[in-house]
Image 1 (tube, helix red, strand yellow):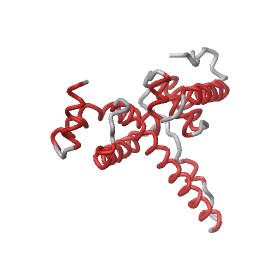
Image 2 (spheres, rainbow, N blue to C red; image 1 turned 180 degrees about the horizontal axis):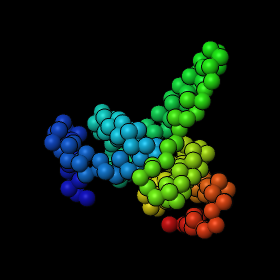
Image 3 (cartoon, helix red, strand yellow; image 1 turned 135 degrees about the horizontal axis):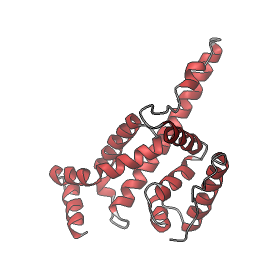
Length: 198
């Protein structure tokens, strides 16, 4: 960990090689988190790049109170939520334009989730259903659910990452799990989603 602190300090002092090394260390973790939040390879790549640009610009503000990974996750989650809000606003405006022009918006709706035909039919369908269920969570609930169940972060670390108290994390995770269980209730097997006190 000491080595990482030295790298961070060097990067803060303008050492681009040190910054590139930090990017190399964390780019996969950030990409996978971005992918789990967006469900899309292209969006995940764009989001990851945007995150590291933000990190480069604001590294001097990083005080080291939290772990670097938690700080990077927070930036990723906040950037994703911000992009989703902009996308939703743009989508609403696009829909309004279509309606004003009297056109159907079938194409607009068909641009959502797409199943991967290369995967087995059953696992592909399950993945699609899970992704669809995730879209029914609020951005904050989705972030907490993904950090807990896809990235196996302890609740304390999620609280530190999102800068909220652990009680809020637990209640939002509980709500997210209930919504997911409801959305996926047609599956007989138990998904094993539960809130633990780690």
